Image (cartoon, rainbow, N blue to C red):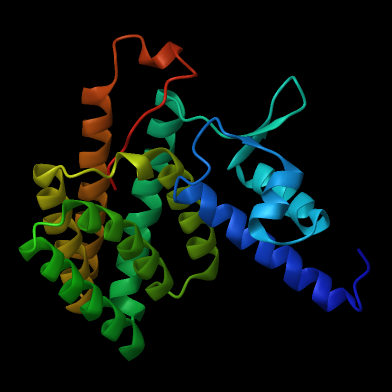
Length: 234
């Protein structure tokens, strides 16, 4: 396909990247799913060229992997990878919450208050799936409010990679949803009150709970099982 200009080509590549990445994060293409250029291009209604570029970029970022058969698949989650990612998230999200409490703007405050209101509504409605789903959005907003571009880029990438393994586990677990609600509320309220150290601690505590749940759910041979899919609540 010929493009009138380089800018249009880049726009299409960005669009294909964003759409393919979101399909992976939301579980439309689950872990282990084979990514085929032609099929993805047809499903996203774009040509193969921008999809090819998107696939290469997502391989670099860790969302996709090329196996020995030279085919590309959505990356499988395993115990060691998940735990390692969580420890990275603990450091990054603690830092992001601290900086968000210091740097959040009036616009950020409006967005955070909206999230608090929405989560409160779904909590009253006992909509466990929506509460757990919104937890991912809370982390994105905190990163954005930190006003640290590099931290935001790295942190959201780690968050979304983990979402690949956890999205389909967002079921109606009311106990888990209740914990998620309380933990995310504590982080957001600390950011709103500009209590930076408290915000950092609440964010780190939240990830510690995730680590504990993964460790408790893992089988005895998890460390040696690179093919083990883990379901991880956000």
